[in-house]
Picture 1 (cartoon, rainbow, N blue to C red):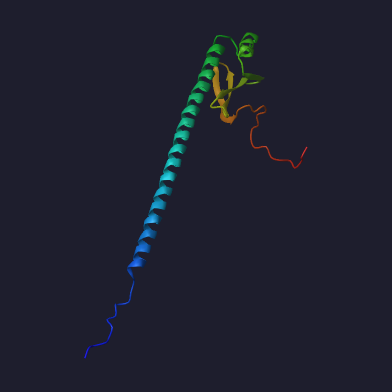
Picture 2 (picture 1 turned 180 degrees about the vertical axis):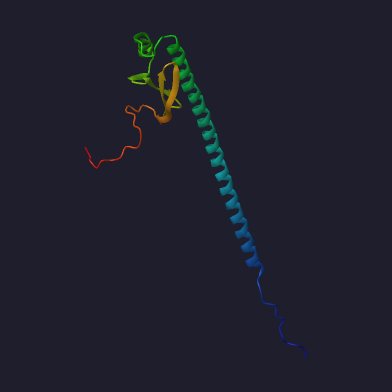
Length: 157
């Protein structure tokens, strides 16, 4: 008599399930690799822009300090930096604004960093001394210069 019992396969995970899981894992890893590559490209672009801006900023800063040194050298050739002859020299310079104060003369000028920003430098000259009072970046084309934040007063007009 023959044994009519069926040979049962052990129950468990079939090969189809493992193939689907393997495909899912490979696709997930490929997606993560693509996202990492995209993030690395964006970081590289950002770092190049930051390096370019930094180089432009320091070049403009150097030009601003050279302008201050040139103005001091010109002022040294006069007895006083408030003499009318020196003020005529300042009037001939484009982009310079000056104010005579009790301590001497304050001169403000802009040096372009790029098409969107300038460095606004304010110097004070008195008794053969030239000191930089402030040096900061401002938007290009800004007509009025403020010393801080302008808060909204609540008026629409």
